[in-house]
Image (cartoon, rainbow, N blue to C red):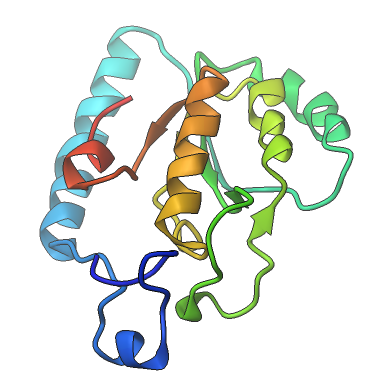
Length: 166
């Protein structure tokens, strides 16, 4: 990524030049993931009697966050693996990127405790808001979640890290 974050903040010129975008072979990755990974995962879970619970767009914006876990934890306790897709940015660093629009995606880092309190095991950082506040904020989030004992997938300092399994 040539632009974005505090080293080279996004401008109209860098956006027009597409310097703050991360690129991937989307069709190839999608086809592989859909046709192979789903089948293999289902086979392994069925063979080993594993229950995977997945939640999307998780990221409350209101405090206190304790009440969320009180409501959700009993249901999530029924799973062997609890997976969530992160909808917010948990960092005080970084600058709002031009592609992000408004800044509603950032919340206080301590609010990430919700994921540990709910019992999540794995979180995906590969969401549409992951880079709203730049790479420093994204790396902060990875460190915060790993520090809480929660595995992260879908993001990293490079493509190799982002593709590491949990």
